[in-house]
Each structure stands twice: as structure tokens, then as C-alpha cells.
Length: 135
Picture 1 (cartoon, helix red, strand yellow):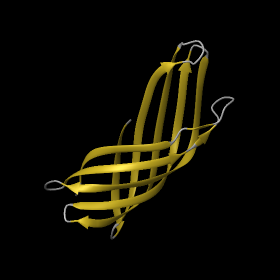
Picture 2: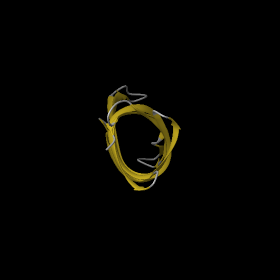
Picture 3: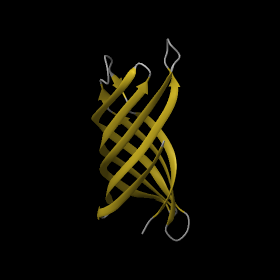
Picture 4: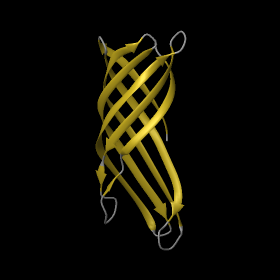
């Protein structure tokens, strides 16, 4: 998954964030073994609260709402759906030098969808690392 996020301080240690990600995967259908392509694009916003841990590390926790675009294509057909889901995030920003930061995070998202004749949760756990700049 690839993505980006921007945030702005709105009050002391409280920030509003906006983000978008892109996930795609190719695989095989279970019975026919034909190729299938999956694409999920979450776009969201929320709030994060920061707290100091040690001099070079600030921790944070946050919540938000994501809009999910789901698309699956294979020889049997195409399925496209959209839905709203929730997101909870936690992480830490390591201050490197002059505004450069490294963001270590874990997110949990939940979005129930029914793209065909089955229900799925297209969210789940996500861990990652990012490089950023803090003004």
C-alpha cells in the first residue's frame, strides 16, 4: 500500500489530518484459477493528538473516517463499490534533523461492504513507516 498524509495543528497538540492511499493486487480465482485484479483506494480525514515521549519522539493517537473505493475485475465480470468506514491510528514521530521526521504507525480500519452476493470487511490492520517534514 502506498499513500500520503498531511496534517495541520488546530489547537495545541491536536491536529486535523487528511490522507489517501492506494492498494492493488493480482491473484487467481479460487476454482477457475483465472486472473483477478483488486484495487482499494481509501481517502479520509480525522484528528490526531500528540504527546511527548522523549526528546526526539512524540507519540500520537487518532481517529477518522475513510471513504473506500473498491474495484475487482476478472473474466467473470467487474465489481465496483464505495463505502464509509472508521479508522483508529497510533504511532510515533522520530525527529531526525531540521524538520525531517520518521513516522512509525499502526492503523486499524473497518468498512463493511457487500460488493456481490457476499459481505466483506475491506479494512484491517496496517503497519508502516513514512518519511515527512514538519514545519
